[in-house]
Length: 253
Image (cartoon, rainbow, N blue to C red):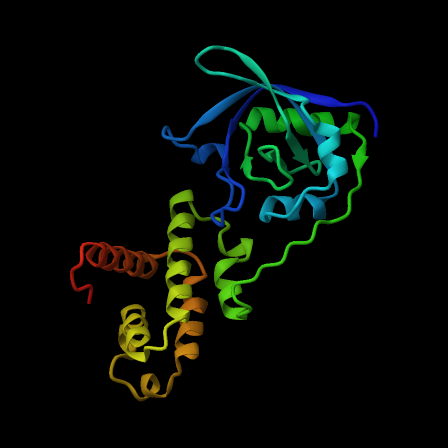
């Protein structure tokens, strides 16, 4: 396994490990985020494929890796300065990418965090002293009631989030959740309403009459998954406005 290596004086900003919005970069951290300070954290070098699975999913982490880092990390309480050992907190790297992981004592990456740029660079400098740890690639199955389109909506490919701000990624996930909700509807009029909301030029056309619910959802998904522009923003705002009205018991449409 080789000698253990650590990063010291580490700031972490834990994000839900199953977050579909991606793990915020340091430049996207907010004042309202709960940033914690770690006295030391073990660093583990792995293959890029293994890193990508852990970064992008909620897959179980191999027990061998967990045993390697067990109670090696030390957290410092911000108020009392008291130090406590954490069960399974570690920094994962493939030599380029860097990610802090916290399993909260379990086997899955319940929380994830980027590091500040200076500390990420320190991890990369450590790589030449680290032994590559080879683990079996964890399996992770996405199952949104076995519907291929819903799975695509729920688990957007990273390329569709790349280049967006943290806020835009959060909005895009909310939009996808709305499409997933619509996919369970057998009310064609409801789906038509939202289709025309996104594509007003389709109103009262022969094409609209011919489209099935699934075809409308596929077109909406194909448009909304790419980028974030004015039409995305307007669609999101309409979802939000109607959601608020429905929560207040008012007519949404």
